[in-house]
Length: 154
Figure 1: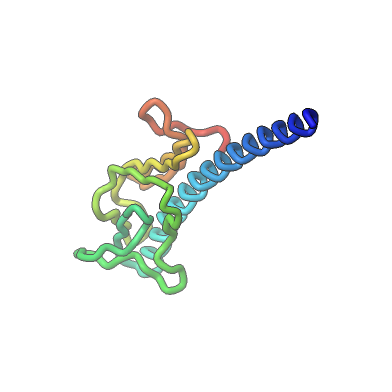
Figure 2 (figure 1 turned 90 degrees about the horizontal axis):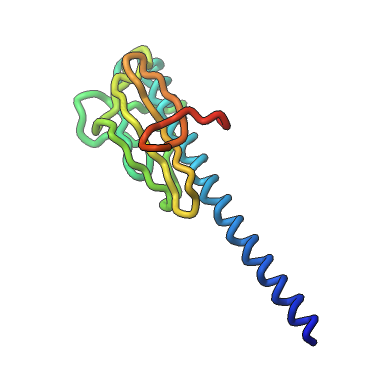
């Protein structure tokens, strides 16, 4: 009877450890997926501006890229591409210093720069997406020591 109790206790400990690890893996995947989706949304904005042949804008909210409500420029929307990619998981937190509206030129350049931080509870991984000027280069990295650093794992 004692041996059976020990086996059940050990199985409980192993199962608990497995659930904790799976939770960390899911949180990490949420961060990775959100960073890819946000970068893809920027690319959709570029392509939409190029296809339309005119400048356009997108707005970043807690749920991802969306068409701005009031703007002097048209939203980056192309029926063939859709608006872009959003963040469907409410557990993902986004912080950014982008302007209220991110502008794209008629040839697809990003005209506004800034940094977006993507985090989720359950993981220490914090991804960052940097849009730098003047060419509108977008890169994804790892947020460390209050900076967005290149990640050799990417």
